[in-house]
Length: 103
Image (spheres, rainbow, N blue to C red):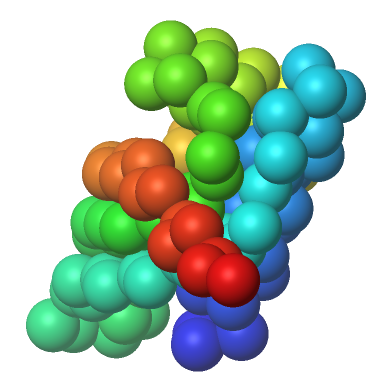
């Protein structure tokens, strides 16, 4: 079951990064942290998945991030599309600015 979460986080995060780069935005890093609730009885399927998605970029706007996330969820990440049919998925995107190197 953990591998499903790995696939979902990788697919969602890399999809958003790809779309941001297609917009000409820089992406310094992507971090996806997933948590999930499973049913207590067999089969112990996922009931809810939360993705905390952190994108580090110096020039991405919140609007860019939201737009690319929506597109990745709807069309680019097949793992997301498949799971969303039966599991509640919440994505919490966060945009952070990478530190500027000092010389």
